[in-house]
Length: 380
Figure (cartoon, rainbow, N blue to C red):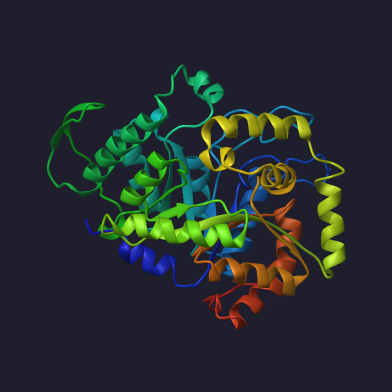
């Protein structure tokens, strides 16, 4: 099996890759009480995925969630399991890459390797994998699984991924005894589609998480509180990967409120966040994040206040708020900072994406950040 380079070349044909984040969850990424918030239903997910595919978006990235965050909305309390969701969407789209987000301590690597290879053949090589090495102990309690000490989670993740990649590549049966797995006579066919490895993504932010991503991932996610800090983080991340002889992509997350005028967009942002934020759910999520996410712990008081507000509308992502010119300009600034892609959200993806597709995507093409979609279909 060759590396993921062939897939990455096709996946990264744009200077700035774009995809939806979190559509498999009720409310999406907007922790708000507004009635028009995202449903997360299968019918809405399928219609949105097909629209995104036709508009030329690059990927769909789900959130692996097993229980909600309480509050009045029980934010993300209804979710579609990501691997089954991925298979369903891959079967009914043509070009878009779809990630499965997987908590590796909850899935055996032999089962995972077979399941992922099946999805990869189903889609003729459009399956991709987002690895999560640990997260919310309340969710792990549902499985009766205790999380390992923080840094050891990534050691386990490395061992897990090594087994998966050997299954994907080795032609003969093999044994494993790596301290975490003792497996006898492991073999599996078919290998992933076309003799290439699926793209692997990770978002670890601690020193151990960053080291894991630099060694194993093709795409790393980094939060971006300001363009200046984001640019520094991108440079550091790329340099760390190069110490392992690897070239990777660095992506970030953002939320979009795009309206005909800047004032209209800002007013809607205030309505969603300031007037209707589900603050009990937000604070529950932040408490969990502080225990698990080093990038949240390192925020200044001012940055934390902005981060908390952004939770009400976009899971803490970078704000892309304004008229089409302003939104395109901010995406351009992220690209100039070195980010190779943005996973973004709307309060209601189906209602809001058509205007973004009609107005912002052509601007990004004119800016040289995107190419015109091949065989594009109408956005409905």
